Amino acid sequence: MARIVISDSSVLMDLAVGRLLEAVLTLPFDFVIPDVMLEQELVDLDGYDPAMLCEMGFQAGELANVQAAFDLFVEHRKDVGLNDCFALAMAEQTQGILMTGDQGLRRVSRNRGVEVRGTLWVTSELATQENVDAAGLLDGLERIKQHPRTRLPR
Image (cartoon, rainbow, N blue to C red; front, side, top):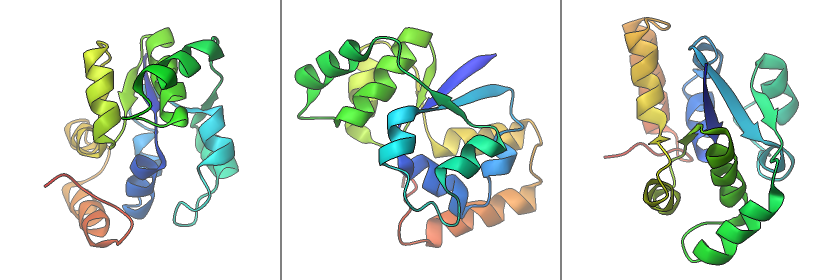
């Protein structure tokens, strides 16, 4: 099963606001959130907290080679944050797909040969796999579009 490493709280916020988190976990992927992100970044996800995410089925991932994240940060600190580097290193080490909404991280990841996906990809997967009906998906996307703390690509 393909591993999806979630790199930032913005993607999780999109899915939480759209009330799509539970549906995402029905897709045939392992969704992994780096442990540093669970501990430091995920404070308010529209009613969800880090413990709830793990109880729902998101996996907490621990980076096998922490030095790799620090090396990435030293090399790319103008474009990405340290926690982003942990997610990127985890995606590289596990040959996973990185899921992010951060443009700088997308650019660095693609330059390093890491496959990158975002909110619209996962909603497209939900539609293709018919895990959410069209009305529910449209409602979720509208919620995301209207919320002040979320963003969809134009």
